[in-house]
Amino acid sequence: MTSRINLSELNKEQLSGFCSSLDLKKYRADQLFQWIHQKNAGSFDEMTNLPKELRNQLSGMAEIKGVQTASVNRSADGTIKCLFRLHDDKLVEAVLIPEFFDDGVADRLTVCVSSQVGCIFGCSFCATGKMGLFRNLTIGEITGQVLSINQIAEKEYGKRITNIVYMGMGEPFHNYQPVVDSAEILCDPLGLNLSPRRITISTVGLTRFITKYADERRPWNLAISLHAADDEKRNQIMPINESLNLSALRKSLEHYHSIMHQPVTYEYLLFDQFNDSPDDARKLAQIARWVPSKINIIMYNDVEGVELQRAKEDRLNRFMSGLSRMGARATVRRSRGDDIDAGCGQLAIKDQDGRGK
Ligand code: SF4
Image 1: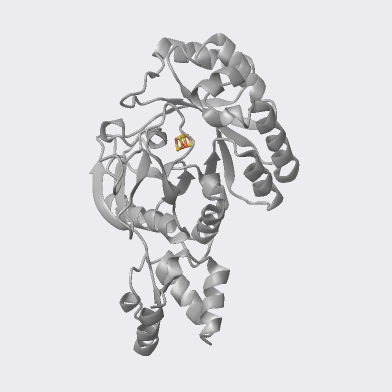
Image 2 (image 1 turned 180 degrees about the vertical axis):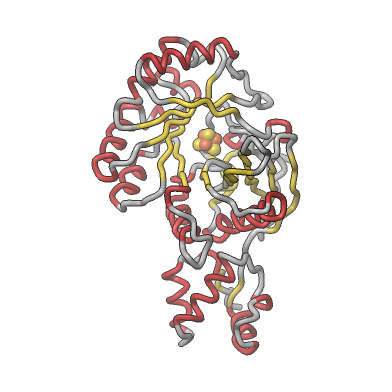
């Protein structure tokens, strides 16, 4: 038996190629694309502007393996965490993070999206890192999370999502091609038509892919999960730093800047008595001068089994003053949704099929 082709794992060009191979006109490829990546269709039956005959033909040879919403959890602060079931029963999470105007109306609606089931990099503070890697997500499994959360945003907050950050489960650059293809699709007029400036892709510092991202002139924002400002401390919490250290990271960011001329963002989880001293602030400010950049200081949400803890407010204040004295642009991000384990570093599903049970 020949297996059916999964259309949701094709990028736009590949989907056009598939349609050409069936002698379909270009507008049919556009219609299919729109059904999958804008209307979140899960079957050909829903595609009512395609002739019945074509829908039957497609059902016989192709399929759409998207995501099914398994559960939705609401935090007291308005954050919504969604659990998605994939076609092979694996589970991933994505989070909707609303930021409100003073009058309580949602201003910015950011989706934090997953790129892999689990993660291989094993950062010591991260719940996902404790799962190990199960598999990469396909293009459609990434866009599907965003589209499903967009539907929730429209229902709950009366507006579409405004921003996407690839900072959920997994290391985005370890699943490079589907991640960049999905970002392209989310910016496509036949997708969600988002501005590239509204999308941020984060990496722990996979330097080869930072270089590739720059060489391909990818327009989305680049964020680096830094979390420590010298090799000794970074080695302790992020094993990747042992092979790709800060000097390698610096080189790749200088290359990125020489091509893209865009600031990078450093994400820095502040841990109590680990990376929150004046000396750490000084080192971080030096890193911030490698290329034009800004720093997000993130208050950590405690994760079961992790010794590192959230920094105390007085140490945070002293750290921020240190950064500002040294001219670094830094903002504090209060992690959101910690009452539903939706905060930074907290996404993990222990009961993946056959593992962790
Ligand atoms: Fe993987 Fe990112 Fe967690 Fe590190 S922080 S283990 S790269 S998901």
